[in-house]
Length: 271
Image (cartoon, rainbow, N blue to C red; front, side, top):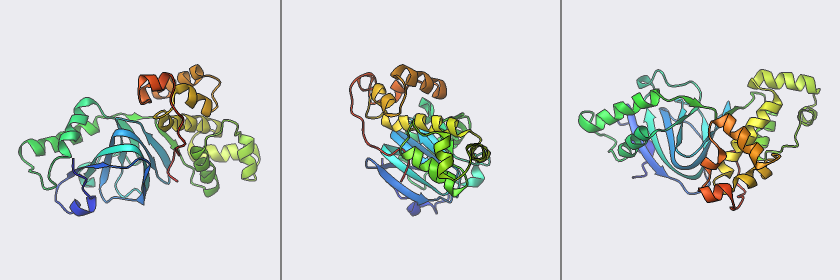
């Protein structure tokens, strides 16, 4: 795989530009945007994508669809990416907001093949067929629930981003209401109007999303304790109910997921 800068090839007249990139651990792609829509697949590691509207946590072997001209930043946690940069006119069905999706075996193999193409690959024959098939496969993907909304108001957004960086099970609606100099009832009503969730439901989802990058280096027991769950079993039940798969599937290995391991101090959102 060749690390290629999008700026060097964006001018090439291809509806789909496949690019693979390896990133050092903890690398931050600070705020930026692309003219093209982006399909960002993490072949390894975990990505956290941040926009003004929300935060999307992308577990291993998943991907995120980023709309064209969307300002975003990405924290790469041990990630090797396979990206497609797509002309907006070629994908009128592309979502208006970021979406996390699964990457089944066929799509994964197509991506692996495509990132080896030259930028001006042939539109006929194998390469053009793969590029076309990639878009068909992406269009079939179903959104996954690895997302929390960020309120539009600066004060509420600040509370949410601080919580994502350091989730605390002891935080309550009353605590947040005091920080914004509002009554608890008024605060809850305002928060729900901007996010679609109650503050308590939002924090519960944020804690689960925070678990995904932590599970790379820590056991289920350690993550459950760190995030304030009553027991590993309680954490596992809530995680599985929310995401459709147990937290042990996101660990570095079965042994690390169920037993020992070391909790790493890693931010769960870009700073």
